[in-house]
Image 1 (cartoon, rainbow, N blue to C red):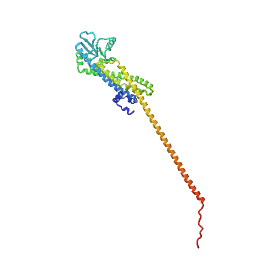
Image 2: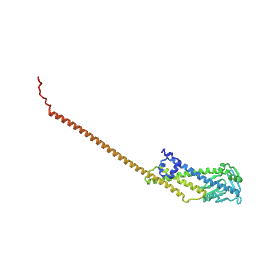
Image 3: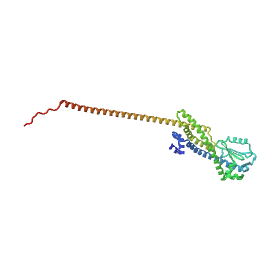
Image 4: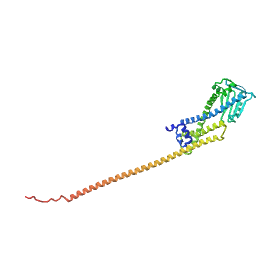
Length: 356
């Protein structure tokens, strides 16, 4: 666990995509570290997604400034309320369809509108990849074919310190350096929104995919903790998230769409989860086989040692018996000699008288 906790974010990113055999290590991580990984990954996703949306916003705003300069008779902004009147038809909304460098629709209507009319405008831009609705007190924006986002003009103006302005001020603002302050305010607000939404969605997706993985593990007779399956699901989302980022940026900038991309997103995630679980099972089976072989070898070694020990004891017993027999034979020989000596009696001594 200590070794795994030292794996860097970028190494995890690489392992998640290219090294499915390493998922067993990633599965054993603490869930909070896995959530930290996906949080960092979603920061990257949100940054580049917001960057592309801000680019569209910048171009759209600049185009609006150019249009205002050429076609707007009256424009004023006071205390958070915007008023715009065209030269040709002052009472009618201004509609810019498929604006250059925007790939969408811009609707400007600063009259007093009903909620129904605003909803009609929202439905109108929903048929486009990108769209902007400029009302008297708010801007409604749709980018890369997702739900619309609403920004208060008062909050935006407070962020860039706009109070009371006229047409010339707006045009100079949009075409001057102050536009970048507006871009920055828009970037921060959009980044927070995209990050929170997508981070929450990914965490919920991971729960759904982990349920699928848990069921698969049950069918394959692989008992895994739910936290381990959840980790696998999170890391399996890495490649789909990066592909989604590329698709989002391309879609935002060009309007290019892939009809079945959500299905592909789900399919890639499931393939990674299934493959990771099956590889973990295969690795466990392999380790069990290796362990079984080791146990068998250990049993053989034990049997061989027991056999040698038995042979040694038998040899020692034989040696004891041999020594005992040898000792017994020696004692028997000794007893025989003593018996022979006793049977022969004392040796006769010569009867010689000493001479006088």
